Image (cartoon, rainbow, N blue to C red; front, side, top):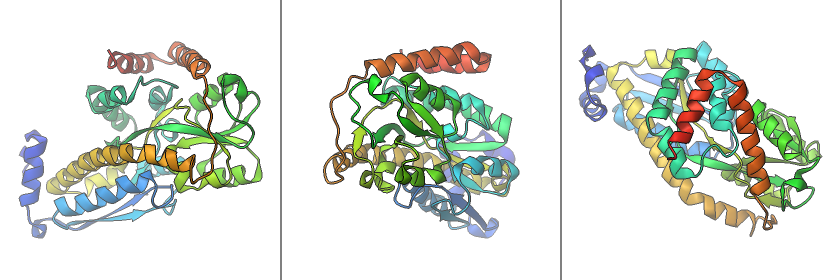
Length: 332
């Protein structure tokens, strides 16, 4: 295919890619990893991408999905894509921050007013510009943002009725400074741990509680060991599908168009599918799952979150402030 494809619209390029026979393309194997359990939110995105990429490439792309940290954990996978030793990986945004600090703008507590605000940001100009900046700085491609969820909180010590109930609670947090600072502002005692160490830390009482995307609390069966559940919605999260420059450079134009189209449509599918599942999962956790939840006052948490937002806006550079400003403006 000639270089003219770069100037085609997305739809036209995708249509053209379907018309190219596999005989003109070298077959490519893509290993796509994620660290969560099979059946988790990550698998919804990965499996749909596999299906669509193989379909749209007319079989010249073979996507092999590797769940459960078979390739690497999230803390190592981004760097591996920069080195070209991992093809593709799904990574929760907060675990990208050590490699690209601008991601922390999305990690800030209560940065999105609601889901409409979040999708307006990520699916619009702000999200596109961010992906370009990330690639320019890291050589890693952000192919789709997918579903935006909330991190729900759970613990084994006490019900959470107000922010004061967090006092001294040993909370597992990812190795992300915004999240550490947020739980400190809540009055808790955050303990940074890699995802791989989290289940054991919860089981042994090394930590009293943690937060995760709703679906992960179920897929990891944390409801079996954590009695208290709180829909805190303090952090929004998304788990983008990333690709290395090395694997993208192995694709011909038609295959690249197929990958981009598959990622875009898989992200939309992920968004719709997981949005429909969340209320059912929460009902399971507090029903059959046996977790207890109580009414709580979110105002103290929101006030603490605003203090963290202000702190980071004051300390970070111009690019960070510009991104936060753009995120906030998208809600207007």
